[in-house]
Amino acid sequence: MKIDPVTIPLDKLTPVLKKDLDKNLCVCNEVLKKDIINAIVNGASKVAEIKTQTYATMGTGCCTQQVEQLIECLCSAEMEK
Image 1 (tube, helix red, strand yellow):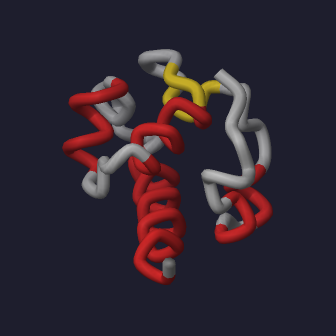
Image 2 (image 1 turned 180 degrees about the horizontal axis):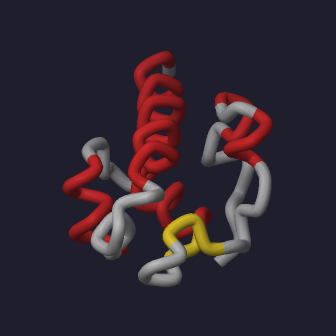
């Protein structure tokens, strides 16, 4: 699935969070960064919701900090609309 920058405010992400959208953010469960972003854009606003929808953060949890950063950036962008 291709991320549409018009509907997903990628400009709200830090440069490091914009990188590697087609690569696994969660390496334990092979969850792509763009799948996590899509879950956030579609309403997931907590790590637990991301975990339920994508299985990210269920392994060692090493991706949790980046998931939290994505939530913070993208949810604050939605609130500004």
